[in-house]
Amino acid sequence: QKEVEQDPGPLSVPEGAIVSLNCTYSNSAFQYFMWYRQYSRKGPELLMYTYSSGNKEDGRFTAQVDKSSKYISLFIRDSQPSDSATYLCAMNSGGYQKVTFGIGTKLQVIP
Amino acid sequence: EAQVTQNPRYLITVTGKKLTVTCSQNMNHEYMSWYRQDPGLGLRQIYYSMNVEVTDKGDVPEGYKVSRKEKRNFPLILESPSPNQTSLYFCASRKGLDGDTQYFGPGTRLTVL
Image (cartoon, helix red, strand yellow):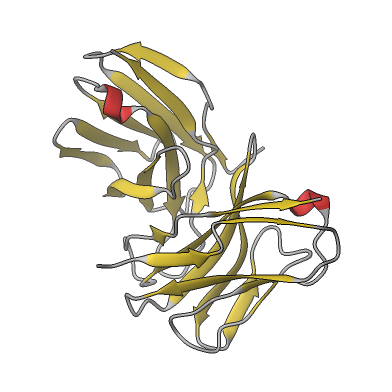
């Protein structure tokens, strides 16, 4: 079993839809949870990060962490074609500990 | 501008011909990593370094070497490349603190024939 599980998709949605992206994990030591966005032929860039359980909102993006279920989500409201990218969840237990990535979900927002 | 640079961006080589991919960061970060990204496997850490002269193996270190002689540079060395090392490689750096941001380079697409 992988430490972090993420559905690779692809996920196609119409412009304006609400998108839900999810990851599950098995390591209860993880404390920091991140979402990276990766456009084609580019390196991943940090989109959101959350410490421990709870919600965090930034514009059209909301990150949720449920440590009791070992489940994290990223919601994108009013999705735009420019949101078309691969979204990778990532997590670690802090400090110099390794960051473990999900496989990434490919999202396509259709105009 | 805070950035991680990698060179070359694209490389086609042949089996057994030694190569080096350079990585440099301008953020004075302690922690640097090399990842490879493959379809269906995601990002896997090859090697990492917590500071100058301190390096350690990640999840897939076989066939790779690294060195960290200066804080800003972290080259990846393939002494005898093989076709199974054909991949997209990313260098990344971060401060090493709780919740810090990891910055990625633009990637190096390597093909070994």
